[in-house]
Image (cartoon, rainbow, N blue to C red):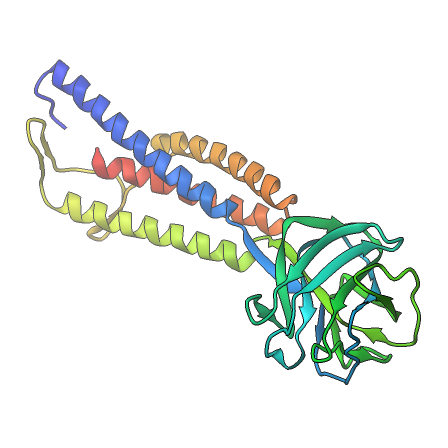
Length: 314
């Protein structure tokens, strides 16, 4: 660049610093947003694969016991909808401790208002609840001879899909009215209700690969743009003409690279990587080997993208 005078050069440098700072901030935000992205999945605790027959006992609370083997977060409770054709009446569903303490409760409305998921209609909890390993009870109020509850005899493996973090306890609970049945009786499970387990999915290596691939494409696009720009005389009004550039010559195509400038952006990106690790841990509660590999591979790419953006507009 050939500045017109010292004042113009100072103003121009300030201008470049401001737009490059904004671009660096933009790339930083995109990068941190990318690594901090969280996927949320909702998995049914229990799925009734086939209807084995079962009772429809009016004015009764029907349920069963289950064991939590690993920490789970429950986000919704649901009631079984026989034939998936809608519920005849509203159904309260309650999650209890093994001793009868109410942990969470919802009312699943009649009809097809509540969303259907694998045979159960669910209503979300206002606040998700985390269950630690131990025994629990879930019961749903049945006041209709039409809304039947599946009656499952052991073994349960063919009729019921059970989440790997859970286990069924053989036996059922039944109480007159919408109350807790104090004892587990019988040799079958009345799968009257279920729940949704919510989990935040940690980025896999393939998801990191998508982010790295996107950064690589962005870097390639900026290299091409840089070559298009520097292949012709770029006229900046009042500041002269830029005709040359530094880089590795590959025929007529140049890959711009200046080690000293790159080191500066590398420090920026290293700071971003640390922020990314903090974001990952604060959102997902853990850092896995895929995160270390993904971050280690992506932050040099972010450095080069920042470097290219700066080169393109200088």
